[in-house]
Length: 111
Figure 1 (spheres, one colour):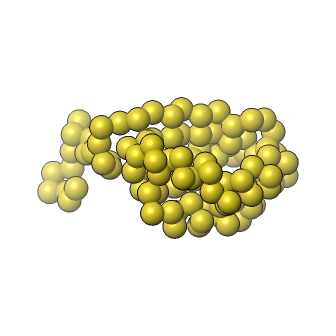
Figure 2 (figure 1 turned 90 degrees about the horizontal axis):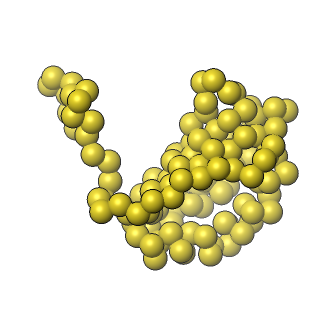
């Protein structure tokens, strides 16, 4: 699995609309056959910062993502709304999805 975390600092005047601004890219990426998840969260400390957690089945799926038409469209559309170039962490893992955080196991909770 390819796991990517990226931080996007959105211009303050566009921060509230960022989910709608990125919606087409988000929907198209989620529809990719190799996409495991593509989820945005907003920082509690900085309301202009969005964190993107994304995962792809393997390197081939990740390559298909960055070579897609919707990725190229996002490269054109999204940067004008940003303060700076997004920061990213990109790793390959030998796992297929989320693992449970055993240190915070919920008694009787479902996995």
